[in-house]
Image (tube, rainbow, N blue to C red; front, side, top):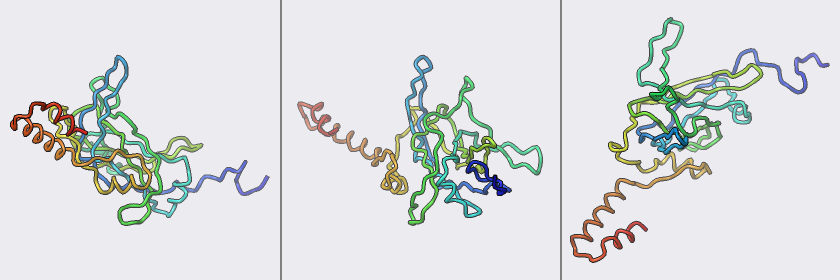
Length: 232
């Protein structure tokens, strides 16, 4: 047996865990409340808009190892907008998780992502996660908390955490619709990420309404037929 501390090809644990920092590159702004039916456990998905994007930065030039490993992932949770004061000056302030009235997790959809090497808008590569299928099950004003975890023989270790800006989750009656996909979202989708892209849906609905109103006031005998053609 060699004396380098490695057994069966496993590398010895580093003297200290790698240091990382999380940066929110695309902030959430709004979302429509998603519904959940407990009788059949179905969820009406309503993704956060725009989809949040988080970058993992290495403080000790260890980002290549992170991208090559399957041991790292980012978990997102819904938290209240205001932090809770720390009990000790040595501790940082924390944010309380948001729960549904029944005590369940307020998130729905895909709340865990693995960092990928992608080009940012400036052309520089980065270790990015995009949360394109994240929904919220309670209305109100919240933040998203992102935590980078590492899984190893030591168990699950939290390496870094950050929170987003505040955003609002609206009821269906108050929600004004999804906005056009941002340039950053389109840029990431062009690199192969499966992200649903949107045009300016508000303008589209307004144009449809005007065309339908025009068809009725102009004396069209077949307003339904006109509306059907517009929808194609």
